Length: 216
Image (cartoon, rainbow, N blue to C red; front, side):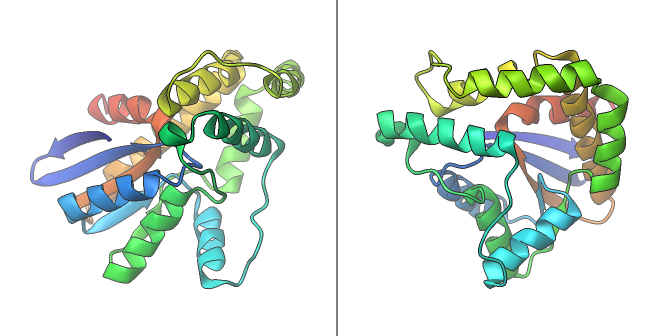
């Protein structure tokens, strides 16, 4: 379990790093929730995405729309899970860590809030950082990643290796850094309202968010 604590006077922000897609992360979220007893749960989703996840849990929506990037990631993760099921477990969509975080909040009457940018903010950030050339190269990189064999031994190593491939392009690295900054600011705002926050964040983004909060 990758868990980082940030204390600001009497307030506590816990950053829980998770691997999106793995069912084993359900237990990770459960253990963190039980141990910390937070009065708020924050998820690495935008507000519309959080509402969409709620619809899935309520049974109002059967399918979750996935981007080309997300489909490729899920298939590659599933491939390695098949090679070593003891380490990876099963792969599911939507990410089990997010589903469990929302379910725990609803069951225990703990507020669940969105951390990530909304569509407008993300679109503006994307346009400001990702050039047409970067976009073309990113598309080509996704095609190559479908066939690429990663030399990894654990799910964590795969996560970092995958992210490294996608952020080799300067524009996309800036985009992910902007997401980290946004989530850090959001958590600092939330700490004025809550005493103990459990923030469920993608493993590959946790160090960035942690550093940006500490340096704010």
